[in-house]
Image 1 (cartoon, rainbow, N blue to C red):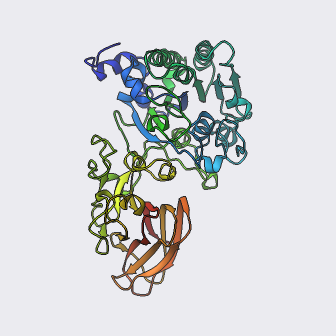
Image 2: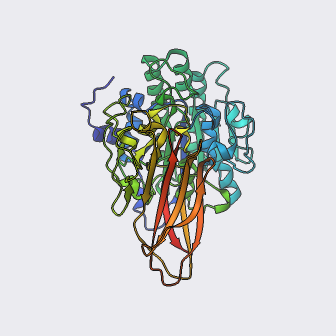
Length: 501
């Protein structure tokens, strides 16, 4: 194993000397844009860092890498069927319908894979899919409209041998044919982790797949037309594995829910580590690079990896735990202080309870989901990065936290009297007992007006509300009041957008 004394810059230069976008980007005429997406099954990024993986290290050093955690429980298992369906379709399991490896309920007709959408947008594109986990083709995750689908069976002869066949096939087609967009799947990392955990054999499997990825990059660089092309390379995984014993599918260990998306190419900043990445972003990243307009009717949940969310919550600096002693101090994941212009009214809150959740707080999934597993904190699918949480259930875990009444108040936004105001936000609300969640507006600082009241579950939902602006009003504040709560559940709000229609 190499030492970390080897500089990342040197590794990147050695690995990617042939594969570079500087040639095409410098051309006066527009290069032909192409995409390779490589899926590595069950691959924890922390284990990549521990392995001798210069290709992945080099791509990360010269590209953009974002990580996040998967759903679990009521939404879907942290397994390959849901994971690769999420990668392929760009939507979460509540839309694509795949909740486990039975593929029962798949909605690929409504939510096809990104290669199929490329074919639908322009049948002249040459699309390719090469896999050795057969359900990805037989179940239609990557569908029959793709120009070339090559299937090897990893369960016949083993995934190590099948990955070698996948690599040989991919290298030949990437180098010698007019591929515009390709998906290549390597599965041995997952198989090894199931068999022997995430130790030495897993690292060896990672190193083999890293070398296979290098062969694909070399094949692209050897294309006769490469100088006139602009390639985006995306590498991702479908789920992680529990360390060190291996295994996945549930909610018990964060490591089995960890995913990441890595992109290297035009527009993807070197060394960027965005906090707002989700697994659904792969498809949108492909469409953006190829210049394919996303039809709103597709209902995609993703966004391009190199497009940052405008949510001001994501700019917050988070701090370590105070009372949540089961969370390591190394995890910086909460703050009571909102962005500039945002305020939290805690005047009706008691003095006791858990410090982190005394009134609305700002947190991320890495921190919040650790507070208590399998209470659907993991399933706020459409939350990204940092979000606002009112959690009466966790607040009650220390004496004095028996009542909850707090209001999150937005900055003042400009409005025009007599017109319609649009209020859009992501909500993840779980109801129990008498708790209530109110969305209120106040024009010009006057009396609050009720716009929406939550008294039933509203899980992982994008909410869009409209309000008529009173004549003469020039500003509005949006307020989220969570009250009548006592050891009930919680309300999460993210990505508020206020605009005149």
